[in-house]
Amino acid sequence: MAWYAQDQWTIQRATINLGLRFNDVRAWTPEQVLAAGPFVPERRLAPTDNVPHFRNLDPRLGVAYDLFGTGRTAVKASLGRYAEQLIRAVDNPARAMAENATRTWNDTFYPAGDPRRGNFVPDCVLGPALPVANGECGPLSDLTFGQLRPGTRFADDALEGFNTQSHNWQASASLQHELSSGLGLTVAYYRTWYGGFLVRDNLALSPADFDSYCITVPTDTRLPTSGQQLCGFYDLKPALFGRVDNLVSKAENFGNPSQVYNGVDLTVNARFGNGGQAQGGLNMGRTVTDNCYANNDPSLTPQAFVNADRFPSAPNFPDFPGPAVTLAAKTSAFCRVVPTWGASSRFRGLIVYPLLWDFQASVVYQDIPGIPTTASHVVSNAEVRRSLGRDLAACRGAATCNANVVTELIPVGTQYEDRLHQIDLRFTRNLRAGRTRLRLNFDVYNIFNAGDVLRSTDRYGASWLNAVQVMGGRLMKLGAHLDF
Image (cartoon, rainbow, N blue to C red; front, side, top):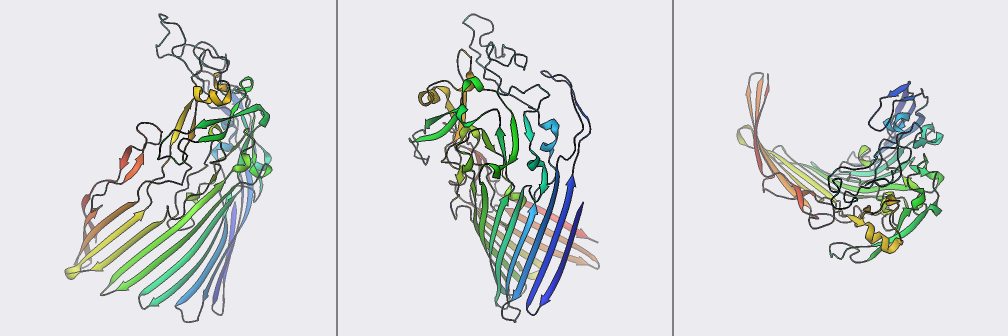
């Protein structure tokens, strides 16, 4: 249930808009029956209530002020709170049980001549009936797999409360000014900050249950830390591998994570000639994320930050890269992501102008950032062993350890491909006969046939940065729209 109230006041040259939204959401589940699978029996879950039960009171405020009383210059400001998605599938108790688990596998475990060697079949007991290393397989990564006992539970503060769920605050301030007749300028500042973060705490483990190690970054001038050592990685002690008892609760119980977007927009609107229009805008901004509070406790895993694209602060809000670090690759070099100012700036402009005989021409120009450059690196057990002094825990009991870890070598949002430039053109012809109107369009997209990279190989190796997808080539299209 939700209630919303708003009112507007005009006091001399100021217009004030006030709003207040209250929502109360409660979800529950009936008895659930999960069918048996290849490794698990049928499971029945009792009905549950308050999954979740949230209440939010979200204020909204907007102010516009005619600065000189001439109607040509306005100062505007706004502030509002916005609750994130209220009901989440992940809150269902059925999702709390381990849905998957992994094992290492060595297809050359058996000696030469044995038909099981190199047959591309895991010759072992894969399921939870035998969770320890056996045959060609290493130990099960989650000992709760196949059990009715949930591997992940939600604390009360993650399911219930008043103004405690994931949310964001948005603030803006802008100046709009009519420079001359038909020419307007807008300068705006936007700020969005997020709260209600969650963290997953494995209660079966403590910081003392992990050993730290370092890796050496490959020598490559394209990497910012080429040839250097990255430290602060953690691996669980082998005797504890597979122990899972996760409790998801508020991150503020452990530290102070943050995610803040700051951006500036500059927009120009113009009318000229005999019905011509032009508009252009520049956006510069960045999202800074910080989950360093979890660095000294490898049993903590920050949950995904609120997706900033769901709550755009500005028309050209940059894509948010998400959490910078996973538990397997946690290092202090990556726990705080500070994208480069200007690298994500975007410019878009358009011109529309009427021609003779009811023709109209328009052109759109875009100058947007290239895709972020990332480099996920597979670190072998042999390399980890040199620093860790032992095999990775994922191989506990296995005769040969072929486990590995994957880490990022470039902090997200700090390096980009070349910027993308695209120009699109349209010609329109309007035809009229009584009350019937026909509009004919001829479009040319990507008129200069640019081939900028839209997606590339992000796994570091011989094919790293090879283009996987490029901008579509020049495209011409004919279209018609009939009103009658």
